[in-house]
Amino acid sequence: MSRSKSFSPALVARTLIAWAVTLLVFFPLGWLFLTAFKTELQAIAVPPEIFFTPTLENFHEVQDRSDYLLYAQNSLITSVVSTLLGLAIAAPAAYSMAFFRSPKTRDILMWMLSTKMMPAVGALVPIYVLAQKSALLDTQLGLIIVFTLSNLPIMVWMLYSGFKDIPPEILEAARMDGATLWQEFRHVLLPLGLGVLASTGLLCLVLSWNEAFWSLNLSSAKAGTLATLIASYSSPEGLFWAKLSAASLMAIAPIIVFGWFSQKQLVQGLTFGAVK
Amino acid sequence: MSTPAVRTASRLLPRLLMTPAVATLFLWMIVPLVMTIYFSVIRYNLMQPDQTGFVGLANYEYFVTDPSFTVSVVNTLLLLGSVIVITVLGGIALALLIDEPFPGRGLVRLLLIAPFFVMPTVNALLWKHMMMNPIYGVLAQVWQFFGATPVDWLTDWPLWSVIVMVAWQWLPFATLIFMTALQSLNREQLEAAQMDGANYLQRLRFMVLPHLGRSIAVVIMIEMIFLMSVFAEIFTTTGGGPGDASTNVAFLIFKQALLNFDAGVASAGALFAVVLANIAAVFMIRLVGKNLD
Image (cartoon, rainbow over all chains, first blue to last red; front, side, top):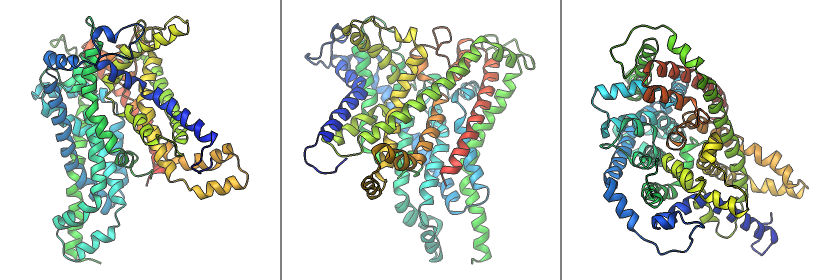
């Protein structure tokens, strides 16, 4: 446990164990990455081929076969718009709860979180019927509404706990000086709350991008997201592992890279600031 | 403190700002709930829209006496419990392992948290085909290398296969949270305890674990929210089978609604899920009430 930089058996042991465990955990993803650049025959070769000449053929074929770009565009639009919409609805509510506390605030927060405890499938039949009747089935708008609403409780919570850390005296001082609500928002709340707004937005983006339940049930060829595209590979037809890997890689790579860059904000947001 | 005008405004404004969120969430909750209650007491088959009528509690009786029901409740709890235990214990172990500096720690962090960002359908198919396939899968190769007969995971151990996939996804999440929590641990106190002769296990038991208490509660709460409704992993791998071996409550309701087209029975099931969710919510509120605020 010594913190010296010199060589020590403990350090070597920890390094080896840590790397071994990490490679084990990461292995499925590494394997997916390798398979995406193999031919279908190489992908199922026994024993597995570790050294091979990489090919980009799978990526072309995924696009040709199922219009990957359309699904990617659907994923991007639905997750970005639902995130922005969610922030626009959640931020005022969180602001109000954090700075104008009333005895009911706590109950409202708990009630909001409890709506998230209900498994989505419980609302499937009515939502499906409503979407069908209002012609929102298999549309981007339909998914955006559902994503926004299902993320809303978590967004309000995250923003609430973030805003609560801002000393109310600063806002009061601005108000005393005659700042309008807009000025207060623009010059005091926004700069101080930027961190929590960002982390909430990031988490919401990740959740919407990866959302599978509603996408699978409410969208198909027209508004389908990448999660839907990948699910269409679930029943094997002939040789397809390499193409499945290529499609998967294209679906998860953007959000993983995005997640790596924002991990610090994500932790803060995910734990409602309870873990520092 | 403030003028009457300001005070009036300060009572109206907060409510006004809260209205969009409260109203939309209320609709999101109440409209499906009322419709579900209505559907649950009528005969409502999506394939036979002409046959309707009040059936009372028949749908509930059908759902609850369905042999799949008990299995799916047990499976839901098994999945929830196992994944929480695996990820909390594994997450603490991993976080402790990489808490101290070592060569490549930054890269290890990145690789370790990557699975959390993988979408459920990719996760499921990756494990189903490339890892757990009994002929070409990596696990089969490993088994063969050691001279053992490869296991057909999804057929022989369907629920545990799903648990492995879900745990793989949530282990990084737990690790990430515990890693962050450990950073705020008071190192000087730890070193002082070491000087006083406390061994590693004693320090772990009396200093590190209590420090992690709050984050453990948060991890359990968030995982409960998301694991109650695990769906995509089951949908894309086992389809709930074989039989009902990997059917959870969420998937059973889905099966009734969109595979059997029986919206009535599915709605009865959905209301059961609401009750289950509320029981979980009571636990959660206790947990959160103590640990947040």
